[in-house]
Each structure stands twice: as C-alpha cells, then as structure tokens.
Length: 132
Length: 103
Image 1 (cartoon, rainbow over the protein chains, first blue to last red):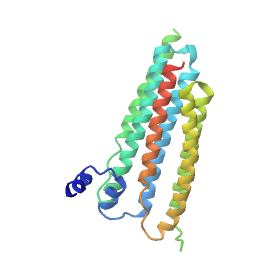
Image 2 (cartoon, helix red, strand yellow):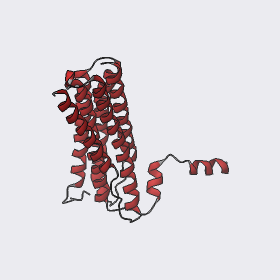
Image 3 (tube, rainbow over the protein chains, first blue to last red):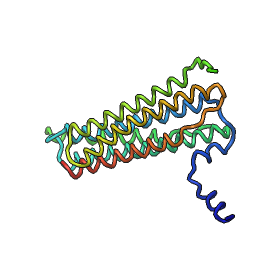
Image 4 (cartoon, each protein chain N blue to C red):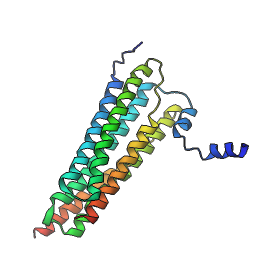
C-alpha cells in the first residue's frame, strides 16, 4: 500500500494537482494573461498548419514535388513543435509565478523565427531558380 | 458577488478562446477544401468537433472565472490546455500524412 502511494507520487501525471501544490496563488490576472499568451502561441501554430496545407495546395507546378512536400511537412512539424513548446512554456510560467520567480525568455520565439525564416528563404530561392 | 476587473481579463481570455476555436475551424475547413481521403476527413472532423467542444467547455470555464475572480483565486486550465495541445499535434500529424499519402 505504502509502496503504491509512493510510486504514484513519483510518477504522478496529475499535472493540475502538482501545479497547485506549489507556492501560492498568483494574482488571478497573471494566470489569465499567461493563458492568453498560450492561446496566442496555439493560434500561431494553427496558422503554420494552415500555411503548410495551403502551400501544398496552392503552389502547384511552381515547386518541384519533393521540395513542396518537404516545405509543407516542415511547416506542419514546426506547428506541432510550437504547440508542445507553448504548453510547456505556459505550465512552467505558471509554476514560476506561483513560486514568485522571474519568468523565462520564450525558447519557442527563436525557434519560430528561425523556422519561418528558413522556410521563407527556401521558398524564395526555389521560386527564383524555377524562373531562371 | 461579481468583481469588475477594469482590465477585463475574464472577457479577454474568453474571446481569446473563441478566436482559437475559430482558427481551429478554419484549419478543419481548409483540410476538406483542398484534399480528399481518410486523413482529410480526420483533419476536418477533428477540427470542427474540437472547435465546437472547446467553445462550450471554455465558455463554461469563462463563467466560472468571472466568479473565481471575486475570490482572488483562478485555477489554471491545465486539462483544457493539454487537450488543446494534443489536438493541435494530432491535426498537424494527420495533415502531414494527408499531404504525403494523398496528393
């Protein structure tokens, strides 16, 4: 019995309880602001999903099929990565607020910038090379 | 008792959820517009159904938040956020399979 309890404690998947168990309640407005930031990241991720699908649907013969597939799937993968990153950022920020610590800089921001930058560069390069 | 928050935080959070659900719907509809096959169906159905469900659940949470604000303690929406994240990942994976296998 005791073993079960200790085991459950260690591998607890009850994230909500784990989160609330620490520190003290922050200003409720900060909790809500954190949630909206998470949602903004999720919408950004959804925009990348729509972008990936649209890129595949719209570019047609302009892009070589392999490059088109690669670009579209990369955008979708970036979208998934951002969604997961946004969740962890939200969760960690909430925990830091509860324990009165400064928040981390968003690691997903440079990931987004680099990903979209590289994808854009490849698109422009492909477009230019297909027209010359 | 309802406390008026001059920053309108509950309202802003509530419409942020609505915006996100709308974006989910759009992604679902884009799936059905440009593709066919089983994966496109999954993208569309999961996008639309999830948008509807999340809209309802988040609206309920919004009401609770308005009430909770007067007690000074708003519970973080861990399960909602986790569900939304899992859904977005599922959408991305299905969309990738859709593009890859049914071109």
